[in-house]
Length: 250
Ligand SMILES: NC(=O)c1ccc[n+]([C@@H]2O[C@H](COP(=O)([O-])OP(=O)(O)OC[C@H]3O[C@@H](n4cnc5c(N)ncnc54)[C@H](OP(=O)(O)O)[C@@H]3O)[C@@H](O)[C@H]2O)c1
Image 1 (cartoon, protein in one colour):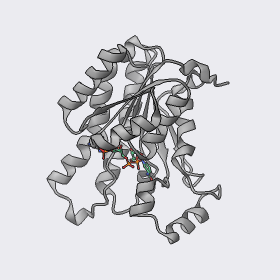
Image 2 (tube, protein in one colour):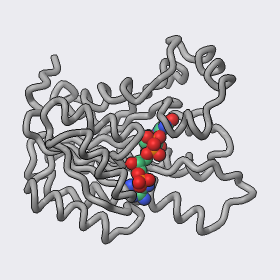
Image 3 (tube, helix red, strand yellow):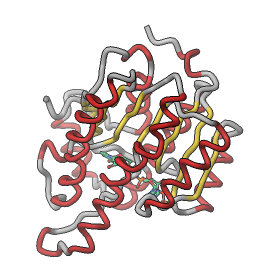
């Protein structure tokens, strides 16, 4: 059984926690008593989020596409907490880019955040994770790449890369007791998705195609994240859990 008390005073790092799914991860981790270190680019939004999350939340402005800023974020955590128990690599850019319009600049911009930052953030936190007790990394991907939806070629190239990264890192760090897993959410009804993309027809299509007949929100992903971080998942590493209402079957 999962015992939430194991999270008390543990140190969790979440990339991109100022809104969307990452914010709900931070909220959940604060609720179970973690000290939560999160980042984003927009400092005003980040500080507002930290205020709403309460005293356990610590915000650091970071552009994860800049390797030196990733190092600075990890150094900030090191200075304040001295260790990392849990790392959740979450921040990504899901811009819809038609393949016809793809440029070298777009490729680099998407890879730098969606995949390179996952590698570099994990690398920057490695020594700190060796000092921690939780020893669990969760990488956020998407079920989108499993369907091969359009126009998402570059997004899905980066998001499917997280699977190979997760599996190889799981093998490499397993000997040290560090577990690495991945979550693939379906289309999540965040404020941004609802504002920018989701139509009434999309909602009806999702409800038709999903096994369970309610739309999926960030609050449905967070418990799965918490489970994978917890010792209840001590026998799981290198795995991918799809959280999409039973739309895609692996
Ligand atoms: N929403 C969905 O339907 C859905 C479905 C499947 C998978 N996912 C995955 O779930 C994760 C979260 O998605 P989301 O929809 O919640 O995202 P979101 O609403 O766009 O939020 C992204 C967060 O990351 C931050 N961020 C963006 N670029 C950054 C950068 N360069 N450096 C630092 N922080 C940055 C944002 O703040 P700033 O903009 O201020 O930097 C924000 O806090 C992503 O990995 C996404 O691929 C989402």
